[in-house]
Length: 172
Image (cartoon, rainbow, N blue to C red):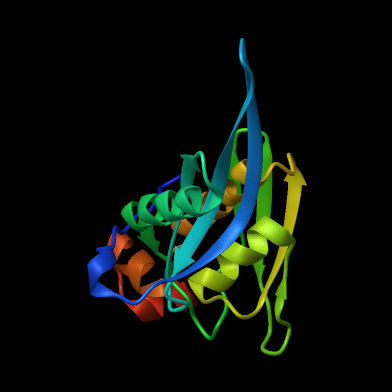
């Protein structure tokens, strides 16, 4: 049972920091020669449980990044963070990209590769073990990581969804 727990967040309510994950130069071959444009993947977050990603395309690098930031602010999700780590193990998938996230003890740090690291640090996760499997394409890795983070549920949410007390969730 895959219940995605997406809690949308308004961008104007919080202070967001942006990170550039990847920038690509794309060439379109026309009769007059090659026309270059740029695409940028940007991750924004408040480092306190809110994260989002966006894709911007433009003729100039700065315009592409600005468009990516605007797009990312429209796709923000809330992530449950307990003791600077995630509440439980989670697998995320998007297209050919698979990611595995596992909570870690204090002092471990963010053990993750490039695109995943940007998403996890923007979300405010300070201790996590992560592994990317399958596609290493930054688009797929970022989307798979956001998918995994949006599926996370904390104990209060689980207790509310099951209609039982918090004590019953932990002790059976």
